[in-house]
Length: 455
Image (cartoon, rainbow, N blue to C red; front, side, top):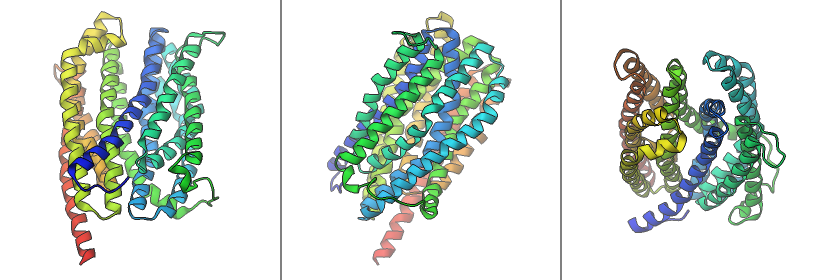
């Protein structure tokens, strides 16, 4: 990161930061996409099991790893405020937390996973595949969470190309082991959908190893000597990370888990409806990587500028990101209208599933427009370290407005399963409006705060 003095310079720097983030996010999502798609070629039970397993895993991972995202605004503000000597201890404390979080997941999973799957009234084979897919994937949880910390550190320095490189390196590794373990090629056991879980775990270990090497040996990371000093566990530093990270994590969890809740509620529909819903949801999540990447870029830029007490620059980055996200939302909306048949065919060969998925994809357009406002604003607010109100707004938008409205529309109107999508879109829209109001308030508060400090 460095200071910019014009709109052109800001646009260029912001583009350099968010483009690698976008490639990284698409790459990470592509791993899940490959799991589902390649499992689909192994059989309908396999793709259903992996889809159910992914729908349970993604909100848990994104929510808990969201706690570690706190490293990004903390480090960005330290660097912007010329306090780089405090960075190594922050990163190491984050790594300590990253080894503890998976232990909670193991414990909770051991107690609740089977009851949850049994409560979904799934076919016994689908339930078996989902359970063992998650079990095998869990072997890579510790390195995955530790990688999240190192990635947050690298991104906070504006070196998003490095994490892009790691992700692009991981894709062929994941695809290779998917091929070997799902289909049992070259003497490997044929594990079907379960093999996708083992492939992901292997990939997580690989990307963590690459990240450790980069942080230790490559500039500009090696100058911080992250692994050069032993730091004792610091409760004070953990508190700093958790006070910012827990609201971020829960906010992300409220957003991602809502879709798992809808999947559970839709278990009463026929298999075709569930499959079409999963297809549309998977592709909508794929498109969400665009506003999410812009959001992550804003956390870096706004955090850096606020650390340097440049409130006008922080505000300019915020609205720059918001405008860019809206442009992309319009483009993706046009793609969903024109090519929904092609998209649905990528996932399935069943004509009934394809036709119904096309209808679900149209509803996904409204997701894109709301996310184009809500996601970038959340990223900007994280740069300001304003996370508690965002947590409350996420809870209200999804669980108090979105899900109840969706349930009512799906249960008591002719919208049926589409009612859930209408409800969630309504929640997203309400959340986006409230987040915009919050952003303008925070911008005014920081401008007043720094002006008074100068005076």
